[in-house]
Length: 297
Image 1 (cartoon, one colour):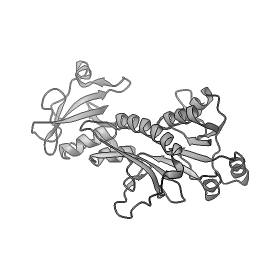
Image 2 (cartoon, one colour):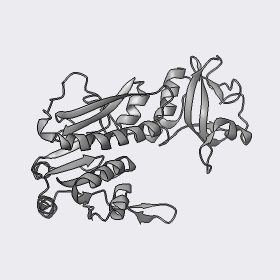
Image 3 (cartoon, helix red, strand yellow):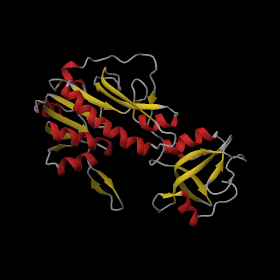
Image 4 (cartoon, one colour):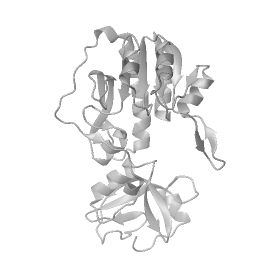
């Protein structure tokens, strides 16, 4: 098939690679390069960089409001467009341009967790499972009928980073399967019951409130890892907490119960991985070699 691929972050890269290996990718659309790093030099997105390595033409429009941008897209005469975490709203003219429409790979079991941060929100809410949906796109936010879905369990100490990578690989496999059997996949409308929205993560959510129950603290730590990273203050230093598990122990909220075990409003959590300012992520035992925790956080 003649495919237009539309994606931006690292999550989308395995999908691009899978499509490039099995179809003709006539163009790649990605968000424009953004200033990054200490020098604030413009850096292409992960999809842009990988597409360039694969020798694929890349387009980075700011939007599709102009007739020119829409005409350029239509002129590609694609059979289908595959969209994965692209980051731009596609107008109806773009959705209608490919012969078979636009397909979206969404990292949740729709209609649960429509929107920007489905992986974070699934872990933070304590969902037992999540998955991938291959969906026909329409004008609404993740409202289109589903062609293919697959579920996967969420581990008790699984982080957003680990689940992100697993779902990305799932999406790559599933879109190849979906395209191979596209004519035989009936579009299943999403039920109206069970709709939830995965709002964008606000960095203000990242500070840990030790007065909350241990299970809620655990989900926040694992759900915000690695980005933006839940954190707590230790002697004025912001320390990111990147992975945790529930453990036994009681004490006042924020009380250090030994090692990197912290009492919560009810119960306690043990920090398994953390990151000090200016340092790399480390196992908790390694962090504690250079950091003395106070009796109370």
